[in-house]
Length: 145
Image (cartoon, rainbow, N blue to C red):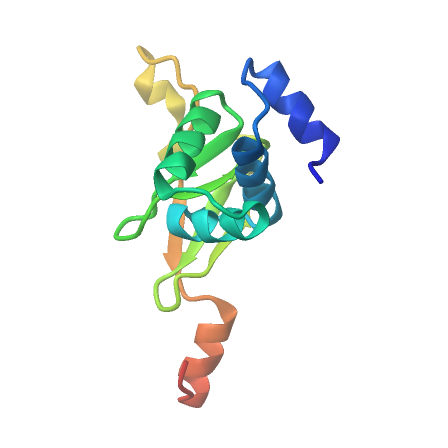
């Protein structure tokens, strides 16, 4: 059963409310940072038949309407999350885990948009790379993944 706000969000964005759009939106809302193949598999489990192309079309429509945010960590597939509060991502170089990290109220010195005075900055995308706590622990103990 779709969350009523998903129906309202689709309508407010000027999109028709369809079962594939609701399924993809719910999948991404419930499990952010998924790639298109995983979204397809999970949405298919709730809908039954759903082609990969249909999911790509829905992702494109939802991203274009500003309902989803697409980001692509270097060396990996594009990931999707519900649009909302600005935040950055922490990506583990070893296991690929992705976590959100908040943003301070002011940009840091290297993120000062005044250097791009001729641009109307609409969004920024910062990705921090390192090792997640689990991979750090495995490294300390010499454990396997």
